Structures are given as structure tokens and as C-alpha cells.
Image 1 (cartoon, helix red, strand yellow):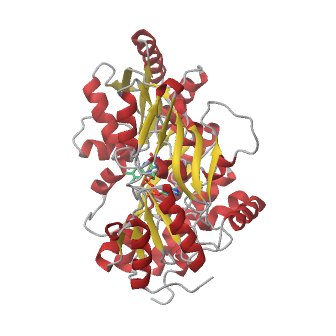
Image 2: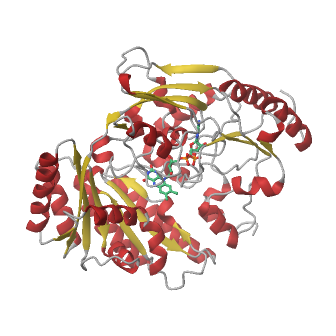
Image 3: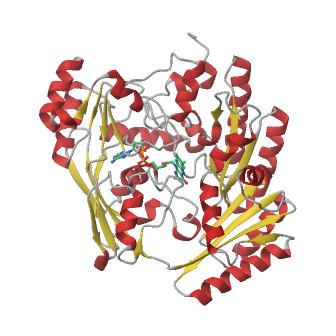
Length: 491
Ligand SMILES: Cc1cc2nc3c(=O)[nH]c(=O)nc-3n(C[C@H](O)[C@H](O)[C@H](O)COP(=O)(O)OP(=O)(O)OC[C@H]3O[C@@H](n4cnc5c(N)ncnc54)[C@H](O)[C@@H]3O)c2cc1C
């Protein structure tokens, strides 16, 4: 191993591998790659947390990724693979500097619908991939809230999913095969381009949700589904949050699997109405979607769901109005942004904790969880909203705080810890969608116990020098920036 090269030498070496036009090393160019939304808010109060990479490289093909990793491993330079940069848990922050591998130009899309699959480069966006597939009557369903921007590589690396997961599952359910470049530059193919395989350990699954810590994914083969041409949406507004939950449980209990079953609390409704909707007032709401191939079946399913909601006292809107249905879904995707409308002074830079609380629970525990979290918020004087994918047990909490003093940070930290611990104590997981990254790393051991040691052993086996996305997922220590109780040291 030789020592880490200085900037000009690094730039020269990388330019030799990918061309000068695909390498950035000037500070102004590196800044956008240095922080996520949460860290940017934090820097306003704690400017010491600044993490510039040494270079950003945009490879065009697998052989270039392989050369870069061989070089990085020789000089022990951290490498952070990057898709569209929309992740919410601090996964991309270069806490030890290094090379950001921006994969957006590896965006080939090769639909193979005769085999019910698609082969894609990691930089292909979800939106572009689905445009190609839908033209052929198919789709890749997970549809995260960031669908317009995120890449397929980023989705595989975080096992992304969204409001359709209750019916269609998460990204993991679609991955058939991956091409991966390992830390030393070796290129491996995991899985096969077939619908089923029972051949050996499923190593591809190790890379799904690995957040760039085990290898760089350079090609992805996904199973695809026939596109359901008929879709119906209804919003049901309830006089109580309990009513909304009871209706959701009744729908699922009747054996219906809706295309989406989303919960919104009273504040979400208020925020939507402040954004221009005229929804009925209520204490809770369900946003329901039914989809399929046959109009009669889809409308029949929706009618049954509407009956279940009305039985719990709901007022429903949007059953026959497709344009309103579309607007409701757009508004649902912007719910976190709408939250700022509820703040007493939206101009104060606040940190939004939505990134941190995205727990997954057994369905039967969701109502208890939401009730207890709301009580905690009240006790701690924290303003926040609860919403989520009630069909698959995923609860998001969007709460805000101003990190102006150690006391305020401590109050927010305790709330976050209690909300996460409560989910774990009810048999849940600390993240159902957004991943671990930096911000949830401090809690990972509480969920996994000794299994985290196994993860660390696998990390050491595949990345013995720890160059791949260091500091994430509690695999190799937890950086100070992720420990809120340490924020005020060295201020
Ligand atoms: C408004 C908004 C809404 C969102 N809604 C959802 C949601 O509903 N559901 C959900 O699951 N997430 C959601 N997210 C989070 C985020 O969009 C997803 O995690 C998404 O999959 C990240 O994709 P990306 O291309 O932006 O990846 P990035 O953010 O660029 O990277 C994510 C992680 O994957 C790694 N990575 C990326 N590409 C590769 C590769 N080729 N090889 C190895 N590692 C790689 C990175 O190192 C990083 O650790 C949302 C984000 C926003 C901003």
C-alpha cells in the first residue's frame, strides 16, 4: 500500500482512467457532494461539520470503475458510490473525504420484456426506466417518493420502496442479478438473468440495502410486472385517528390487498389544506388506491374499501375524479415539504427529523405506536406529523427542531431515541425504507445485537481496508457527527 496522493496527483491519475472531463477537484465543484439536506441545516449552527471529498469521478463503464477501485485500494482512498443523491439518512456524506463515484452516466436501459425483465446501468433513473417499460406495457413498481430523480443503483443499494409496497413489495423483490465491482477492483456477477434460481448462497441479496459499503453495483437485472392500466384513488377522512386505523385493518382483514393504503394524521390534513386542497376536516385520513387490468374488478375493490371507511364514519372524496386522485398523490409526495407551512417561523433553519424516524412495525402494533409517539411529542413539546404506509406497517414521523443550544439538541435526541426504541420494543425495525446511513447508525446494534457483528465480519471480508463508504451503518465506528450528544464538543 502506498500513501494517499495529494490533490493534483490524484486528479492526474483519475483523469488517466476516465478522461479529464469526468473528474472534479475544485472546491466549488465538490461542495454539492459534501452534505445532505440534514447536514446542510446542521452546518448553519455547527459549521465544524464540513466533509469535502477529494474528487468526484464520473465513470462511463465497468472497466473504469474497476480501475478506480484498484487504485483506491492501493492508496487506501475512501470511495463513495453515488446515484442521484436523494438518500435521507446521510449515506453519501464523505466523512473521511475520498473519491465520490458519480454513476449517473452509466445509465443504459435494455428492456427484455419477452423475458419479463430489464437490464439497466446503476445510473438509469427510476422515471426513465419506467418510461421505457410502460411503453411496452410493463413497469418496475416500487415507486419511492423520490421517483422523479432517484436511480436504480441507489434504489437497489437502499432497498427502496414506496406507497405501492403493500401490493408490489420493495426493490429487493425484483432484483434477479447484479454485476458488482469489489473493493480490490474484481468484477463479479451475482445471481442469474432468470426468474428463479436455487443455486448457491444468494449473494446478490447481500448487496441489496448495503448502501455502497460492500461494492459498486455496475449492472442490475430486474424482474418487471405488467402495467395495470386501470387505477382509482379515494381519500377517506375520519373523525378520529383510531377510525382510520380500524378501517385500514378491516380492509386488510377482508383479504383485500390495495395498491396503496396511506395514513395521514390531522396535521398532514391541515398542511394539505393550507397547500390549496379543500379536504374535509378530520383527525385522520386514508389515501387508498386500487389498480388492475379490469375496470370492474378495480372499481369493485374500491367500492368495498369505501364501504369499510364509511362504516367507520369517514367522508370520502375522489372516487370518480381521476384528476383529483392524481393531485392527491402529488400532494402526498410533498407532505414533508408541506410541513414547513405549519411552522411558526418557516424562515428559521430547522432540522427535519423525517429522515430519522421511518420505522416499520407489525400491523397490529401500528396504532399503539402512533398513539404513544404522539403522547411523547406532546410531553417533549415537539411539533411533528405522523404519516405512513399503513398497509405495510411503515410509519414516518416528520418533526422539526432548532439546534441552537445543547438543551434543544438533547430534547430532540431523546425524542428520536425514544421513538426508535419504542418501535424496537414493539417488534419493529428502525428503518423500513430510508436506510441506516449515518443518522440511524447509533441505534443499529439495539436492533441487530450479535447479527451486527456478523455484518461487520462480512464487511471486513469484502472490504478488508474499509475503503467503501466508510463511517456508515455502524460497520466501522460511528462518526462524531452522527452522535448528537457529541455535537457541542469542540464547538
Ligand atoms: C423527497 C424524497 C422522497 C423520498 N421517498 C422515499 C420513499 O418513498 N421510499 C424510499 O425508500 N426512499 C425514499 N427517499 C430516499 C431516497 O430517494 C431513496 O433511498 C433512493 O433509493 C436513493 O436513490 P439515489 O439514486 O438518490 O441514491 P443515492 O442517494 O445517490 O445513494 C444512496 C445509497 O446508495 C449507494 N449507492 C448508490 N448507487 C450505488 C451503486 N451503483 N453501487 C453501490 N452503492 C450505490 C450510495 O453510496 C448511498 O449509500 C426519498 C427521498 C426524497 C428526497
